[in-house]
Length: 132
Image (cartoon, rainbow, N blue to C red; front, side, top):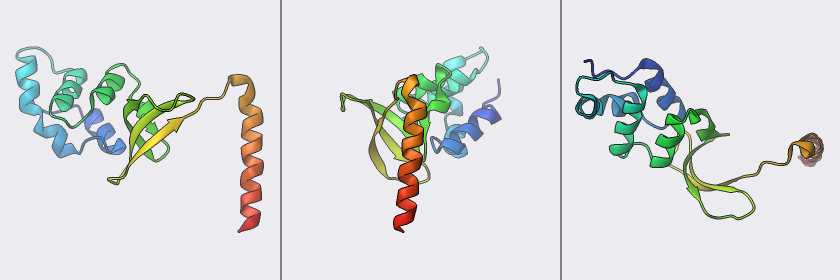
């Protein structure tokens, strides 16, 4: 069996700043040991990256559940959940392309309020541009 990660997986990890192509390639031996004679599914590569400490358990679980695209929030990549704060979903995150670690809170307004909130944010942004 080949020890080459699927190209899509390698490109995706590099795009999110989760793992470099070299880090993905480096777990090839681990993938071979995990699969033996079985096919090397993407989920096995993800598990191998988590075992090697390249991905967090949270990231691996989200990717394997098909929610990997949700790990990117603006210029940040979510690393783990935090119990804090109580009023939103809290995460430990890393700025993509940098070593900066932040605590990030994600708020999701109720569907009925999103249009009004978007208009208010646009008005606030307009006021901010007038100040400069």
